[in-house]
Length: 328
Picture: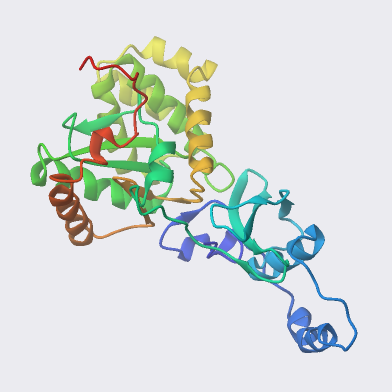
């Protein structure tokens, strides 16, 4: 859901969002009653959601999407529910994007949004199939019954608070039951040094995977001191004290060697329709924005008990690509 009216209002949100909504002019609100009455005029032809211009105007009004937001509407295809057609609406504003699925009645008069579930599958299977954690930084026990996947941005202040909560509580509360993966999702349009930080983090991870988490914690601790101008110097200075190969790190950062990996994670986030940070998945269950430790603990405890009999999430949830072989 888009909750910001424009980029300037992001500071008051409880999370960092990836796509803004435009404020609608006051004059448009005043004109609305007359326009609505005109729509009900006798003899006027009925509108159809299968007409792309009609549907675009409708969803723009729903989302308060002004002209600075580009909207593309796919051709309708049969949906999983008989009697309904499915249309994808893709909105973009600069580097921000959001995709939403609409279901349309056969006569084109009704549209609806929502999730479709198959009672024979995990309710979060669609997202589980898209979560790929191979070669991503992680902490916790391999094979754990509960897997957390965090989409985060190093410049996002709310990501900083969630990161501290996870790092301070998970290892002691769940030494063997939880494994946590970090996925870069830098919101470049509002955070000027977030992608550079993500690229540097991947460089460090490849040089020594255990050092990534030291970098992760250090960067969030010093978030307020870092700018787009000084991040390179700050990271290299930190690397000296971390006993890393500073020259190799410098080359990796300057050449942006790991940028394709960061871009791959950004595309994964978009395929999951993640449009805000932090976004956390717990065995595929999506948790938007920040969450308190007490609430997260309730969800984890539930999943631990559930997985004792279900065995349809955790490390076997489709979060990693595995060959179909009987060899363990």
